[in-house]
Image (cartoon, rainbow, N blue to C red; front, side, top):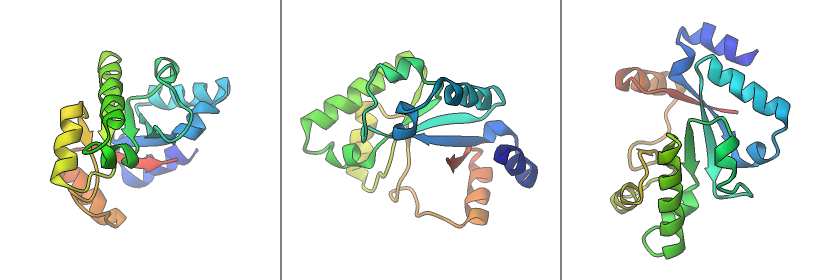
Length: 155
């Protein structure tokens, strides 16, 4: 299994990693896929639902998916300043996620305004150029070790 190899090569525990599953994959997940995702969570991996809002995943999926965080697609974050529907969507998602103890990640935050609006809407985590540019693996690993934050793996 690739996850075993990653753990051996990095010397890190599973709890230091986030496995990202796209919304498209999650909505098409079979019971077997859901069991595998749950097994990864059982090993300690964090599971993130990526690109939320781009496909056909409705709020009802959030009750049944074994996830720890939801990453709101950049298109919603970019629209927060001028689109009331985006504001309501992000706020509603944040409220639902808070009740279910799921973290909300604002993807693609590029400006101080986007950061402030996403925070006001209820996002609890943020990523994007506003905080730093993508980095090579060794630099990213060093940054995460210093910050004591999980590393994200996209699946």
